[in-house]
View 1 (cartoon, rainbow, N blue to C red):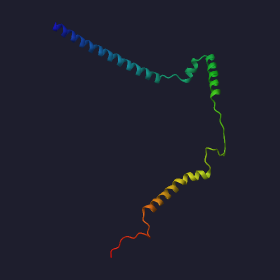
View 2: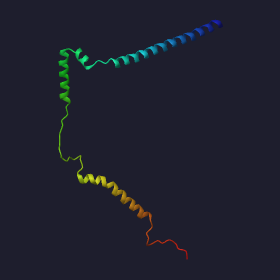
View 3: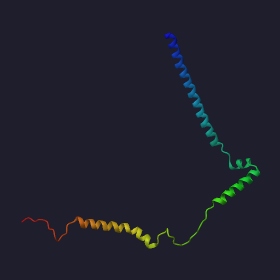
View 4: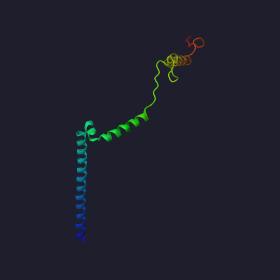
Length: 130
């Protein structure tokens, strides 16, 4: 009985290895075929002329109608303004203030910190040796 179980276990292990190899080969072939197909399609792209030659005149007419219908619906309205100030755009003074304000705030802040950090000269004198 032990020999039969040993033989069955050996067969099961060898069958598992065999099926594993078969599955690996099938997966490898599928990957190679997929890569080959992608390379083929990349190298053999139909040109615009080939695609247009394959279309019939009726298909071209219906395609033209469909495209023109889509374009009519999607065209945005355009407003052209030349040298006109809008609410979104700042004026000249406002533009200058936006550029100068950070510098003024930085200078005033550093002057204030220096004034606070240093002791006044008239009230405080360093101790002198007698």
